[in-house]
Length: 299
Image (tube, rainbow, N blue to C red):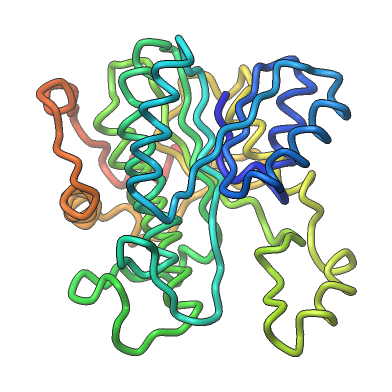
């Protein structure tokens, strides 16, 4: 199992929970120092030595490409890819490739990493892809005419766009993977008291850090749905769904727009330099009807 953003918060809690279940877990982190510390803690608390660390910066497409090349050469199979890594930044910043940070890390980095690892996931089928989105997707808009938000930027606009992109990506991915034995689902972890919720560059940082334990879910609570989708027998074969609190729930109406999902996919291919293979084109199956999706989500 590969867990991105595993050095802290929900990612670390998910890696620990999966390791306690006896899984072989690869923790993907950006910072080597923080990654090594998290690795030691997860190994000690899980009593599982089959936990390993890999380094990758999702804000760099080159770093993602290098990591995926190493991974497929090192590991013979991949049963679960948990796309957990994410950023929340008050000021507008850009990735190393010049993309708005939220869109570049939360969506494009995960998009490229997932597609590069798809051959291994298919080889390992039945396998699972889990994408951590957020309730923020409900207020998101994909600004195709200004995807990097160079005009009128604010933190919520950037973050919610990236979280809606997560859902659109997951649904399109699930359609393309029909018949391969690889499932793709996304989730809202809830409002969790992690570092991503605290902007310590503001005067509110210290105050929020004091009261977050009272107001927010713990990382362990926030990781439950991720762990459920990654390992529960109940989630086997389930694909193209949105989950919260370990249950299927409807995502926002905009997330079911198949034209928008396809447009986002094609844009992401261009921006990351990814091109669909013949195999990927061949497995593109029939889409769900929106009514059927919503009914399934209420089950």
